[in-house]
Every structure is written in structure tokens, then in C-alpha cells.
Image 1: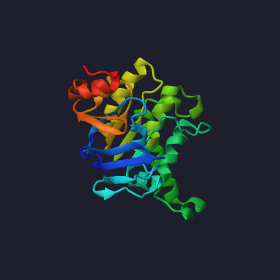
Image 2: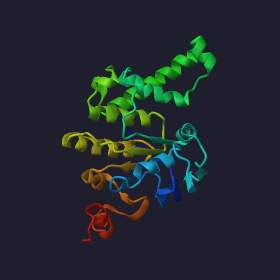
Image 3: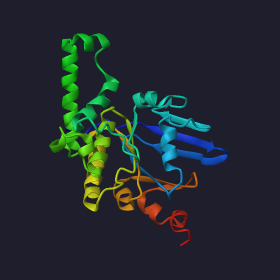
Image 4: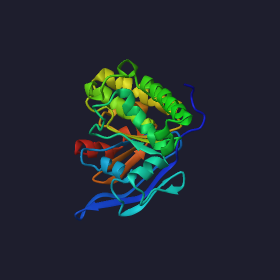
Length: 261
């Protein structure tokens, strides 16, 4: 697979906010991901990071603010509509179809952008078999990229925890996103798996026309691959910048350590 020249989507969140039972979970949050950027979103536990992912993907409706992808509003759209518009995500809690093979888990995601109709499916037309063949080829490519080619025919439930997380990323990529949201992809991985994951995420950004926003608690991973980092604390953005700037920021150090440096 060759390196892409066309980069991913241009995503913007401005003044984003949501409350639950009077508690402000996210307040006046803004973020911009430029085409092809690899960005990180970090913060202490309970800071509101996953809530922001849920707002972006339509799981929660925002109380305030705006969300746009390539200038088109995402507000009020369903999760399916947002996925079809080009935003894909993985989850903290793995959501694979354990009874299906690795390859079938990926192929199912391709069906969101089918190139044939209901009649083609029933009649098993030439078009049906051509499109299915193309989807299988693409699925095999993704499985290989994520290092799962040796497990292609294994049931998803029989994979290790780390490999299940890789499969989730492959499945998200199969929806052909222009923005990919990764929610703690390194959770449960050992140090060797994390090093491999860093390379995989970098390869994805280089080989696919996709922009990436990454949540993780592993600072080595975040600082090692992200170009820009946004820091959240108690639902509000407290800092943003390059990794070195974030590491030296007093507000960030205080949020994580509970004391000013």
C-alpha cells in the first residue's frame, strides 16, 4: 500500500457543552483537527474525554456548541449518519462480534458503503460477487496492516486482548473514515504491544486519507506519536500544544499531580 497524498478530514468543535442532571460534564470545549493530523486528547480519569467522543459521534446530543467535518455540521445527526459522513471510532469496552471470524468482523463494516442493492443480494448477480470480492480484498489488506493476518480465520473471541483492540481499529478503518477516533487503544496491552501499536497508528495516518484523534493514559504513546495534544480537566480544556509544551505546562502538571510544580 502506498503513502497517500490526499489527507483526511478537517474537524472542528467549537463551544461544545453538555450537562447531566445539572452537572456540567463538558463546558465550552473547542478543538480543531487539520487534515491528516494525529492529535491526542488527555486528562485525568473523569475529565470528560470519552464524553467528548460520544458528543462527536452522536451518542450524546450537545447542549451547546457546534461540530463540523469539512465544513458540514454534524449536530443533530444519528451515530449512523455521522459514521457515514466519515467519523469512525473504537471504544474503551471492546465491541466485536466474538462468534464471527476476524475477517468477517472487518467485512461487516464495509457493508455500510455497499456498491450493490437488495435485488443484487437476492439474485446473487455478477455485481454482487464483484463487490463482495473487492470488499474481501480490502478486508484482508486491513487485517494484514493490523498484524492479524495469521489469525484471519480465527473467531474474534479467541484473540488476545491486544489483538482484539487491533481488530477494532481495522473494523473502524473499514468504514472508510476521514476522521478516526481511538478511545484508549493501548489499554490492556503489554509494553511490546504498545510499541507495535505506536508504529501501527503512525502507519495508518501515513497510508490512509485519515485524521486521527487519540485518547490514552499511556503518556509515552501519546507523546511519542501525536503532533498536537489537548488537555482536559473537569470537562474544560486547560491546555493545548505540541508534546514538549504540554509536558512543561504548569496547569497540566497540577491536573495530573494535584500540586503546582
